[in-house]
Length: 152
Image (cartoon, rainbow, N blue to C red; front, side, top):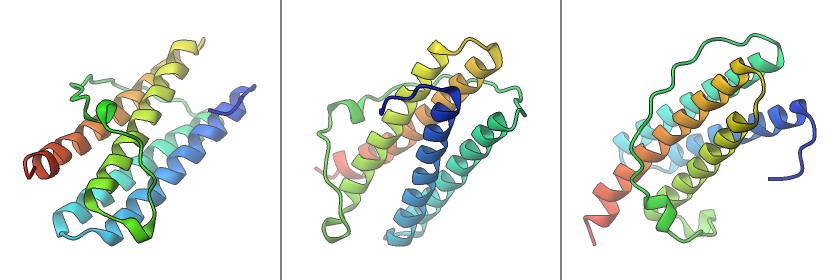
């Protein structure tokens, strides 16, 4: 993560991550080989858009209440190597790996921001976003386990 000095810089960085996630999942949906995978990617894009909207609300001082629900960590993303991803080298396995890594990074970022937040509402927001990213990571890990690991 680049050196962020102000709260606005942190929010702008988080918003840009969510924007990139929306684009990533929409792009992945367009390349999906099955309707189920396509819908999953579109659903993830919609959720990431919701995160972006929440962060923009924080920037505009519209902080709301959030409920955090913990999820199990399958830890698949933690053991997979980082990959380089390009359209020319697109495979479902690589797309899932990249998606898991992105969700893991976002989860860790929001966890760190929550731990450093002084304001209780911001701590709550970042904890909520970390939990949401954790859910996405778990969802992708389950897909990876069911499709990639069981086929090998």
